[in-house]
Image 1 (tube, rainbow, N blue to C red):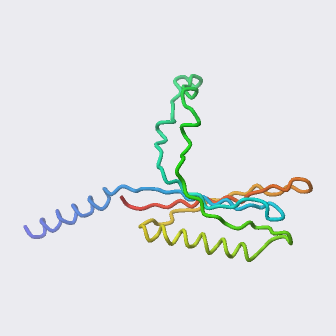
Image 2: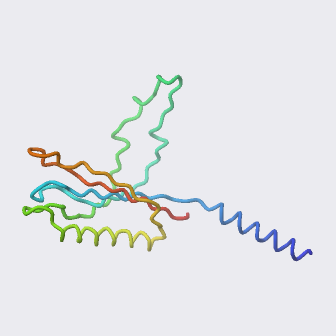
Image 3: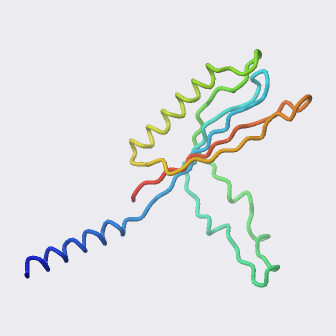
Length: 151
């Protein structure tokens, strides 16, 4: 009976230790240009200097009063980040499928490097602002990849 109780205590300790681990998140963003003639800029962007959101967060006391004016936008900008060049979706002839396949290879490589560092892809979200027709000529396809790993 004593061995069973001791085994139970050890199992509970392992369970608690496994659940006590904290999780670290990392966001990688891809911006792919949807500008005709290939004149846009496309990149994988990764921050390299973590920032504490609490330093830029204020609370409203009555729903109206805020100290957001005390927070400077320029202080929220990180100056250390990595950019990986991607190809644009469009070339002079229109949609360039070779560019899309090349971007897929680059993005896969980035994901694989992060997995090697112990990250796991948690979820992906994307959005698009597309060319709205004649005379616009602007658009981006943005994707955010959220990774997590145990600390």
